[in-house]
Amino acid sequence: MSDRKQVRLFRTLIFNVLLRYRLYTMKLPQQVNVLLLGSGGREHAMAWKISRSERIAKLYIAPGNAGTSQCGVNVDIAPTNFAGLKQFVLSSHINLVVVGPEEPLVKGVQDFFAGDAEIRYIPVVGPSAEGARLEGSKQFAKDFMTRHGIPTAKYRSFSKENIGEAADFMRTLKPPYVLKANGLAAGKGVLIINDFDEAVSELEAMIDGKFGTAGNKVVIEEYLSGIELSVFVATDGTGYKILPEAKDYKRIGDGDTGLNTGGMGAVSPVPFADAEFLSKVEERIVKPTIEGLRAENITYKGFLFIGLMNVDGDPYVIEYNVRMGDPETEVVMPRIESDIIDLFEGIVYDTLKDKELQVSPKTAVTVMTVSGGYPGDYEKGKVIEGLQGVGGRSILFHAGTAQNGGDIVTSGGRVISVTSLGDSIEEAAAKSYDTVKSFSFEGMNYRNDIGKDLTKQSKETVKKAAKSPSRKSTTAKTPTAKTSSRSTKKSAEK
Ligand code: AMP
Ligand code: GLY
Image (cartoon, rainbow, N blue to C red; front, side, top):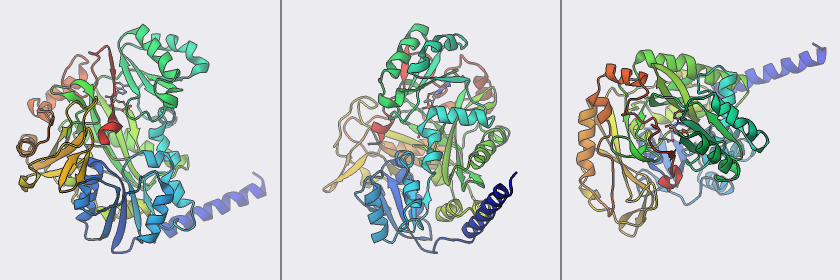
């Protein structure tokens, strides 16, 4: 190595050590003004938790919903209006920005703050745009997993240039075929198709623009059969804490039937995610992911949501999301007992390893109430009756709601998620279903079986079910429908 190169390397090393030391000695003020970005049930659950911190001075939510306004002050700024956010954080003396949804992250909100001399001192909980590619580009995520030896389904990506090779690749896979638009496609970009010819023609339609530019590149991957689990990690880029895991219920109908939604309910903890399985997740997935991000110099200070499949007792990554899940956050936040602002401080100032994460041993179950017609077309503006009568039995997390004069009205597909804690799934679910019955709006719909698959089956039978591809009761898409597509996750939230 030349002398000049050695000097440069030494300088970089010193710079990194000094930067780390500086971050390590930095803290948020004791009382913190927080700006939270987003407007769904996930953000209400985060706002609820932040508002319970002893360190919160003022909490603002941009733009928020009728529920978040019970925890702080809603401000009418879109999370992707970076110039508007800058003006607001300066005028309101914000000390910390927490990003709920993926869109502002993929569009670079963290980089915007870090790159602007006037606001670079305000830390952001959320990865850089480069880190957000783990969610923003399926191909980037899959290539990243390959580079770091992280277990995931076999895949190849295709575009106009190499579409001719797709059929040959598909012949190496067993049906059904999993087709994923490369970019963010408002939650609709995944198709699972049984029939070979249909899969080929769908691939052509995707590359021709069925999902806009998101589908110009398509990842085709092997179908994994098993039970899905959502694992959440908070990281400062080096250290990490694994948050409570959760199981999401994605289909609209009882017994996992019908179209996919953004999520109809969730349970935490998940009985089949025992210590042995979770340690495989940590060793094979969490550690290599964090180490991979660091090795590639990708700034990642925020939450990482690992959607995984339990295949014969082994975890495989289905997807990364660079944010918390919805409705999983509605069961994760109520189980976190430690102070959330302390946790945020650890994330943004590289001190996560010194923070304590206390988790309640209770079980949380959330049931999502949705508008009639969702996940297809639905009407908005329905008055929600009976909210005053809801006692302390459950926590109501608003997703698509708005204040209209004295009324709270529906403003989205997913409307209110009802979370309860209990000593068992049965107890928590019974409380949530009791509460669901105490309010209503025209067309209100919900699943009646949240958590039932986990209570019916003992841990052993769930394990066995994960081994058998013909089992029925899981959230994994079974190839019953000829073409099943993930439907309007985003419209669910709006
Ligand atoms: P994604 O957007 O990658 O999360 O995919 C949406 C949903 O499709 C997942 O939550 C799974 O239910 C299903 N899915 C995605 N990839 C696969 C796969 N390789 N095998 C089986 N199911 C999958
Ligand atoms: N509940 C799944 C998600 O947030 O993407």
